[in-house]
Amino acid sequence: NIKIMLSDKNTTRSSIEIVAPANSMIHINPALIEIGKQRLSSEFDVDVRFGASVFQNNLFASSTPQNRAHDIHEAILNKNNIAIIAAYGGYNTNDILPFLDYDLIASSQIPFVGYSDFTVLLNAVYAKTSRRSILGPAFISLCDPNMFQSALLSLKSALDREKNIVLKAPESSACDDWYLKDQFGPREIYSHSGWIPYHRGHVTAKVVGGNLESFIALLGTPFFPSCEGHILLVEANINEPPGRFVRDFIHLKQAGILEEIKGVIIGQFGPDSPLSGEGFKDILDFVFDSPQYPIVYNVNVSHVDPILSVPIGGEVLLRVDDTPEILIL
Image 1 (cartoon, rainbow, N blue to C red):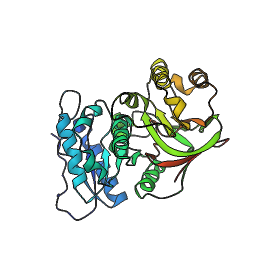
Image 2: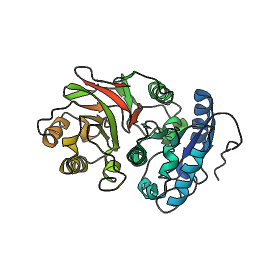
Image 3: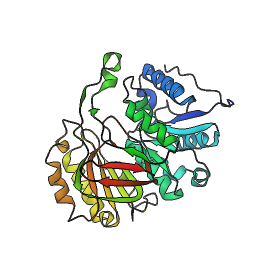
């Protein structure tokens, strides 16, 4: 039995609401949930609320599409909320899209935050409302007792809408199953090899994208955002097969997306992934035909920690040189 105390709806204190548009939270250890609640409460000075259906389990998701959409509507209607954060990713966020009230979403400034399959919602919201969301840590990331401080500070800056936030490669990373360990740690830290330039240059534009597999799921639907004149951000799962990654990238190319964009940010892969080696440049050579815009890879916007926060639908300056960086405007 999951015993999580839910905050009183009538509280006047600021709050953050957790929703589960994909997988159910029933699979998260209750001790981890308490760690996440305490971190959010202390670091952001908020109450932590959970959507009504987050602990349900229906087929391949937390609840029915209608219930998951209802949780999001209720979170928006709660004016005390300062953010709506995805529990984590999974699959099938796309089945809630027809049930969302985009007029209601457009009327609110409460940011959505998450990564992985939450990519679907972040980009659909941008496509339908032009609203800015945040590709950043999910609730499960905040449950890590050894969470990277850089990820936490990046999220705080994004929620505060700070200007001219500079994101750079960290000194270290981690990509282990920390949540399966006794006491949920320690993390297996290794040196970060830096953000790697593929094609140099700089550009200022709004960002679209996220998890490549989830982003592709929107293609051909009314929920796929315009990519023209945008910076495309893509990342993939830790154990992503190289063939599938290339297939999905070629799908974007054949759809004309790579001709419309102004830059590319590619997320970091785990140290044991075949996509993290020197051969990744060969993949980019295969995908891109003499690109005229900046491209950088091995960036901390993926399933590998630390997860830095980048605005989907928000403007950034991408500088790709010997020491690439992202300036959030």
